[in-house]
Length: 361
Image (cartoon, rainbow, N blue to C red; front, side):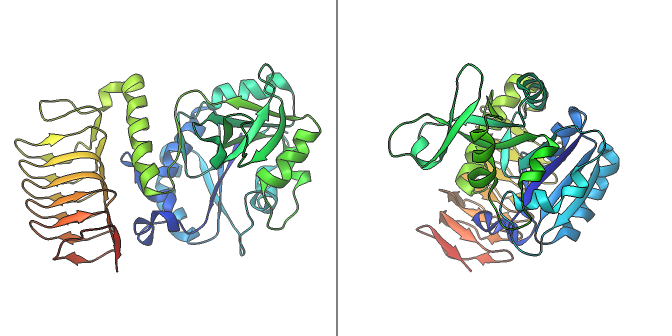
């Protein structure tokens, strides 16, 4: 089987992290975002993954070459010269996606994190015999999204309603699709939307089916959702393979600590924290609801919550970092500094406190 991952844009919503790496390579729970997806695809027999991308394909491919051999999955790029929306890239990658098997192929939005129930999706797709399957997820505030109106018993999609004013349902498109090759005949090579142009036509012919995603779902393309996504992911990990989570008197709730990280005396870590490889957390540090990327040093008695600390950064002694502070790569926060929602570009030194959310150039 094959799969296409829609990587697309420049990752502006996750800046300053994406100034250092393309967004799919930014770690989430100590693993590049895109690797969560590729590993799950491999587990259901996908042998070839095509990345639809519009910038820095070399960086992506060089990085993923290592994983190609490890995972035994062929990874190629399909590069668009102009943004083609969410359907155009399928037309562009047509020759890579079609083979003699006639098998359906997966399409994923690269920002989506979930339990990826691909096996169940394949079974669902075979059972209904339609042309396309989409995953949907239930949300609390459907008025912010495009809602999928479907027949509860069969999953047959009736229509899509964009940001409904009146309640029509609470299921939204989760950005995970399984499509028959014939869907490619419906897509022109131009900027076009699969959600707004392609799927409604398939639904009108009663050949589109939706499966409700079991477990959690999050689009982690922006910092607040990335932090929420980490909580949901670690909750799910607790249920499925809790041995991967850290334990000890210094750990509260769900915490992921890379084996090469060093944790000092008297720390309190958690809930919902990921600490990457090579990190040094000195004594008396307090961490909650945050991600600490590879090679970071957090000095004595610093306190970090609801924030993302970028690669090889340093947080000084007694510093306090909170409220969606995002430190880019190699940022140095001096001792006793307070950051309230600062977004700091790479290679900066912060010598005075950031008292309200702002971007530090």
